[in-house]
Length: 270
Length: 214
Image (cartoon, rainbow over all chains, first blue to last red):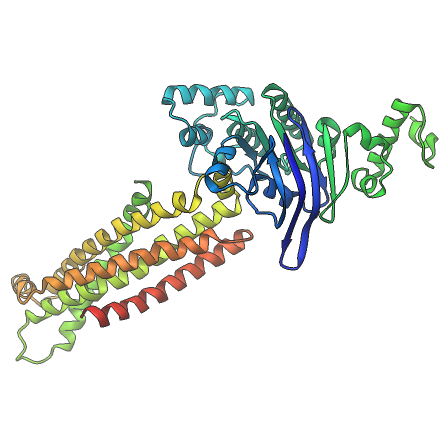
């Protein structure tokens, strides 16, 4: 479980995150959503320790991570896997070496044991047999899956994903979402995902934190979103008419009515 | 080892070409300026030897290396920063400065003095080759001049300079690359800036070391 308490971060005079608190539970996909510049990436960087918050704390299973010394942080970081927006695979290493990298750093296992583990995670992300390929030879979706394999190779307790679907087609995005969800449940990981992909929100959002201009504007589950009356959230999530229609159809399914002023004939016409 | 290969062997070709031509040009230009019949012709070899050892091999070669190896270091680290590879290492709890920069500095300190020694040898050989090919100085006279009044301290001085320059060539570009912010354009700018600053610092250090040690 990860708890964020009253996090505040400023860059110069600009307050990027203001008094954000949240609780992210184990075995669930916890989503941080918000428009570009809303502070979600900064919040994630504060959570993993890439940035130090000006105020507030981050707790990993009740242990205060923010005020730990470097050696203690290293211990926690061994339990963290992170999937970066651009995959962040090491260009000079092939797929096998990329995934083996954390094993080389943190285990004393033999090469054969490490290779077995690499092949197991590669198979888990449906990429068996690409061991010797270099990142430049992979598609965007494959890079994401290799990065995901590297993130989970040490069996982390915490998985952070920064915009896992950016730059991917809808079908590949769904594959990545499905993988993240399966791995979260399978390994009982506390997963935190930074996204503005609405498919992800509706597919895997067990807990959703909506950020607006650096503040926590709303929190809830993907089911709560459908019934939310928060105008800012609705404007963000259901930005297009298509998504508004989808929301209304979902409400119709759930409650048998659409509690707004939209014309139902428009929605139900063939 | 990988860094030694990148910095050392990766730059060997350009260092060899530059050294041979610098030696050759030094011989021709020295001969052009030594018009007095009172000065023995073997003096050309002495002048070429000392010029190459004292200045051309350490300083000129290191300025070229600042361009070749320095820009490579800055752009490699800059690309790693921009593509979040450094963040990925930090998330794993790795001290990225020690992991990424220290091997580059160590490799530069090991390989650049070796390259400078190679440059000295090739520079003098280039001078000998040009001298005999152009009929300026016979090979036996060149060899005679080469061995007369040789000061071993000059080699020590050149190696001292090469260690100082090696540190500049590796640390300055590493700094600019490591702290780059932005995208491809900024990587290019950081790389150019790293080379310019390194070259200026090499010239400055050259002056200071010459004033202190000679």
